[in-house]
Length: 186
Image (cartoon, rainbow, N blue to C red; front, side):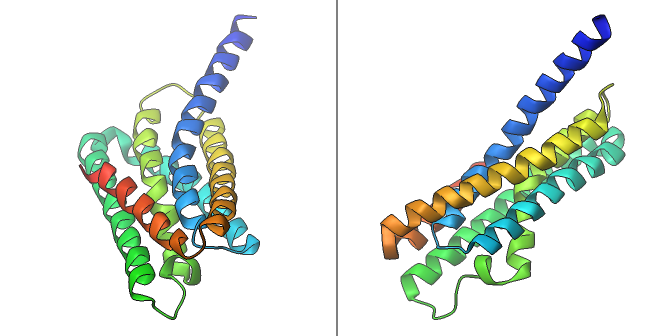
């Protein structure tokens, strides 16, 4: 009975951590989705974010014992910088009317940058998990599934809101990314 209660408490704790990590992906998804995005792209981005939410904590677990303090701060700054760059790019596209679609929606590099940036906090969590007696496979599985589902939900919500906002959706999406990135940096 005591073992089952311990496992239940661990699952609940890991689920709450997974939800907290997924909020970044959800918020970012709203901003990206406002630019108008196809369902196939939503699935691709959500899946990749889920995969990164598995890879990053695993990486953090492996190297966390030695480098947690130093890399944790750097990881947050890198993630914030990437989000700021993507937000500025969206704003540039919205104000100066580039004929091509935004980097975020069209290139594999944009999707990789998004997935990487929203998963950097999972790297920091992985550092902590490396020092704790916790079911690491359960943790990273929950992080991946919840992160992917929350990213998809945010993208779908953003797409719906973006259709209401019309041409201004790129501006709002860029501002959201920019603010979110600056929040990491500052």
